[in-house]
Image (cartoon, rainbow, N blue to C red; front, side, top):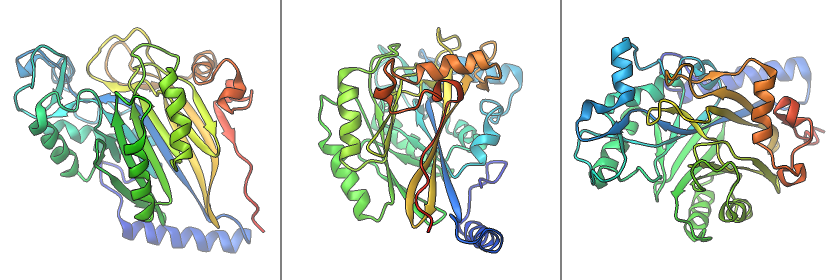
Length: 352
């Protein structure tokens, strides 16, 4: 479990917790799976805003300052979910720096390093930093961002940086890349092999790809997603289009083509506010097998306040579930029931 108030998990508490759970289960239930592992995924997160030449121009930080909100505000409605899983991963679309922009001719996204606390308080554990805003402030800005995240014990990966996370006796490896990909996954394949050689039980590949505003994956996405699973990835975590795109369950792996935005300080009023917390649950027993896949539908904000909130109305939920599937459900590898529940329960492995 993630500790509240932004404290990071410790190996000691994990080991004690695992022992207690195992003993309880063996005593009360006989032979069964001792534990499950829950992974959560969030789309693009910009903690900060657009820099137009003067640092205080960031609409996100100005909004927070004006309303007296602390750094827990952006994730306040969803932090309980993210603090109670075993690993939360998001895309960090922006830079934590006070340096100079590499070019004022483009859209530059940033905040000061202290705003990285929002991820900690929100329950995020690891962040992909490979996207089209990684170098908004040059190599120095990227180094500042890595330092801001790592100084808070947040995992950072992408663009050649690998990250390995251990929880409940499971070793999880992460790598990430941004477009252009040009139907080439040689770099990702090499990273997958490296992570497997380092003993990773699960491998996650983060891909910043696709067309902005397009709810349909491109031919490149549809080709590379399954290829990455074939290359040894367990989950392909896609983002970049800023809108939701379908899920594909393929050969025991999961491809999230796009999880839209979550906390997104770069746009106070996106045309499409639908987003999700995507979760994958694994059995931990004699091996690691997928148990459950689910999406929790949400709005990116309420009244343009940069604070995501889960949907309560079934009609809103079903609208989102539909966006997460291909028109032909067999292409998604999901049952028809997903359109009503947003959840898939996979066959449990033999427990004899």
